[in-house]
Length: 367
Image (cartoon, rainbow, N blue to C red; front, side, top):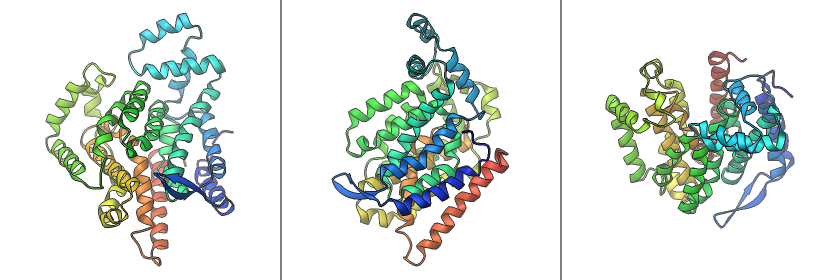
């Protein structure tokens, strides 16, 4: 089943999502020793399955052919694979994963994409279902923001790493740092950018807008002001790594940074958490505080990518974006009165639909 009309991304979400939400009652789930009511796994899986199938059967999109040809080139014999792996200079974990999958499915590239998409979607659904008070709205944000297309159709190697870091969220919440670090390191073998999440584990701890996050804001502001010195330091750090091509003058000067509209759009959860600090503090909810700090980190990464590299730095915030969706939805339901919350949600959804049209039509030309 191949996606040929991209409007179906929203049509299925509205029709099936609305029906499933009305048909299946929420079920109790234990989160940090408390009983919360969340979507049942069955409707969540039914809603997600078409997106997995569409990702597996895409004809083209971004790096699809690169991944397809790379998978087909992986040797099938262990002896040949040993030499092949030694020739790889980066992200050897993904090469090992490709080899293991090839032993199971042969050269079936569509099945290769299907298995990867299923794992990625499982991580997204698991995270939203467990930690969000409104699964459907968070899933809508994932689709309408075009994160789904950008990552499950394109940057699939990095999105596997993102999925693994999403599974770390509960460990970070319970301060099980050793297990979280090990899982992030595993993600780093799939895509080296995941290692940047190691310091983030500690930055996001505590109440929203605490001293650590404020220090991070000051540090990023200083990097923006002294951007030339920052890029020199960044170049020294990245030298002899898989991102050493950032040091190429041609690539750096050709990249004018992340679009300001994208920066503002993805900074909305952080701005909402700033306005709703009182509601967050009064709730005393460790999940929401942690998600708010993740949202702040997302905004900081995007701000930094706006003056440096949208191609490289602009790819990092996806690791911290999803907790921002959770806190945005939570605040949307608490920052407004009972009479105005419906209007606020309509405006919120409308803004995402406008961004979807902007990205899909004006930027990508897909609709």
